[in-house]
Amino acid sequence: SSSSSSSSLSTTRKLVQHVLVLQRRTKMTNSERNDALRDANEKMKFYYENRPSLETLNKHKKKFGDDNQHFIMAGTLSTFLCAFLLTPFLGRKIAQDEEFRAKYVPKFYDYSLEKPDYAWTRAELHEQMVQLQMDLHKRAINGEFTPDKLEEMRRHFDGVDPEEDDHGWGKIHPGVDDDEDIEED
Image (cartoon, rainbow, N blue to C red; front, side, top):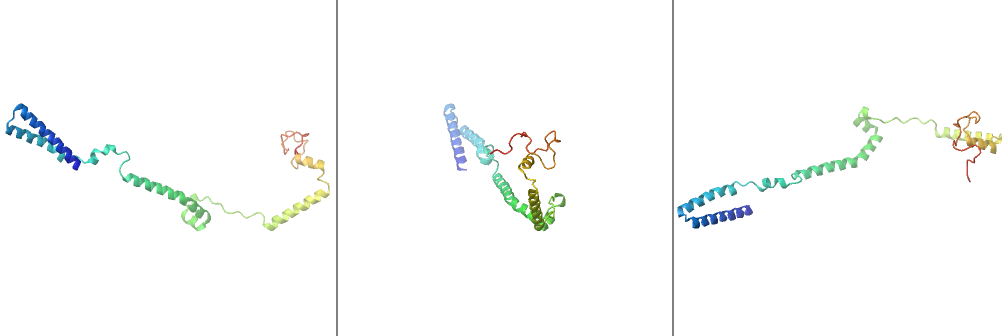
């Protein structure tokens, strides 16, 4: 406000000086000079009385919009940050809590699977492993694991006759020829 009044005063002073210079050059009378000053004051009155605010004049200088934009950006950032931090906890809650899932997750969006029953209990699995060991032991006693038979087992799958396998689909190592060593020392 003080800068606008001082600039208007300096402009008014310049105008008055201009009128005084005109009076000296043209030999104006006092009444003509007063009329010229009144006219100049009337023209200058609109300059300092109806002057627009500085915010209106400097609107084009704002690059980032109004001050509310910072609050909107901070709110958006905090929303995404909270969502990012809460997602693992919410996912764990949905995965582990049946009641929560039934209450808040719609049926068309629920892709959870029922836990299957195990094929074997521990005892049954142990019995099967013991039976396999006993079977291998009996086969070793019968002589099924001689070096020639072991070499044949290393080259072909069980139950595949190498003479009838024209394309080599039954080989364990299809790129190795029959006369090459499979295991290198």
